[in-house]
Length: 269
Image 1: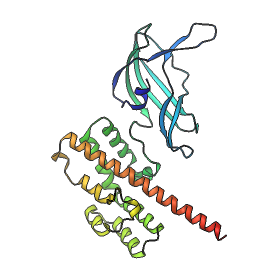
Image 2: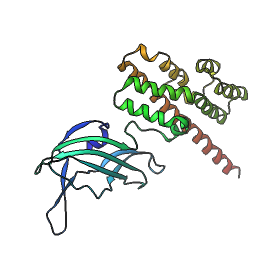
Image 3: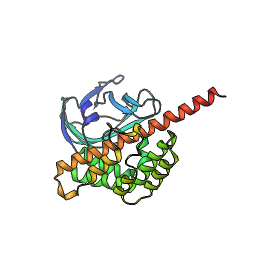
Image 4: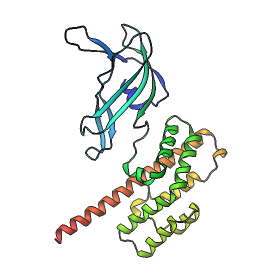
């Protein structure tokens, strides 16, 4: 059941050996119910920001044997008690058995790799498109995932470069560099924008020493129909990983410079 909840993508039907359990009941025999063990999930609250234990807060989990039923399980982070995770699935088990079949229908927040909060603002206008891409990627639909991610980057390339410009400005870059980054953010052609600022990206935003804009452009450079689904899935994963890492680095840089500014202000106060 832990594997079903933590790592099984929606749309998957599996056999679960510990699907059913029995809930203690005062004055009567233990009541059969859906198993709802504690699970480990990434909690992105400001209090946590890491993997934490989530506990089910669902009371209505009575099990119906020998016929399928839709179940809803809601989990709450045990540490911050703020973030929740809700699952929906159908399940069926035979009377007297703890094993059964479960078909995961969906979960909220959506299934997939963790997303830094900064990424939400980085692709804010196309966040729903990004989530569609992430869902397609998690199900192994490479061409579909690539198509969604490509739209996101094409629509949000200006915002991405603008955020890079904010970091450069915060780090004290020359005004001419900041001005060129601003101009590039307004450029319609991604390749032309990259050419104008390819050597102006702050070192702290490089990913393994490489320009994140060039990495994104490289992943997008081939047409959808020139590759098979597996190739497109690799490209989609690359786009998502670069965007996620870049969002993390932008967030950390802006946070570090703000904390340094406050510390210096206190010293001179």
